[in-house]
Length: 95
Image 1 (cartoon, one colour):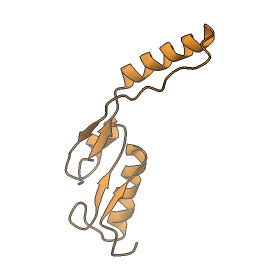
Image 2 (image 1 turned 60 degrees about the horizontal axis):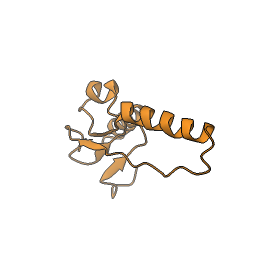
Image 3 (image 1 turned 30 degrees about the horizontal axis):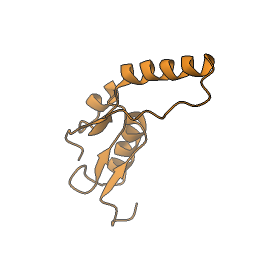
């Protein structure tokens, strides 16, 4: 891993746990040498060493909006407007 990398943002917490392991194997210290961030705020984020900084998504609202949009399309709506839901940065020790 090139020494000029100072942060990695990974698409899921599980993948970020793998990145932490790879960085550790390469002799890189997290967060001193490389900051790592994940996505999902899953239980994995709390079990990594160090605990993972991650993005939390509003899963219940995502499911509710998905169902609402799907039902609108089933009922004949030709178009549904996109929905943007808020996310939350959960700062832990990896960044």
